[in-house]
Image (tube, rainbow, N blue to C red):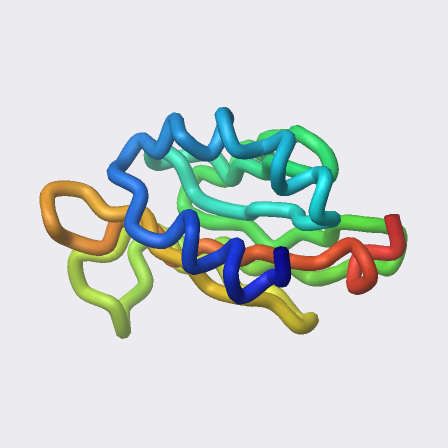
Length: 117
């Protein structure tokens, strides 16, 4: 499966998106890392590895041995009703998590070649 197909497959999961835990093995098998915001204080990662980062009010961090920059923006001003916008500085595909019809999170799927893992 390519990254576009995978992002499309997970796009639109309903918050709190427990389905992402169930699809983590498939992401790993395909060499993908799923990055998304959860609650008001966490950035979660599933797939190539499983991790969560304390991100109250957002966070800037780096992942992978290549140091891919991740900017997790809490309550982005340019996206009303969206709680999280995950931005990365490498090739990626976007997906959404929705909550009662509104976009809760704009997440990112990154391929292992960008992370050097």
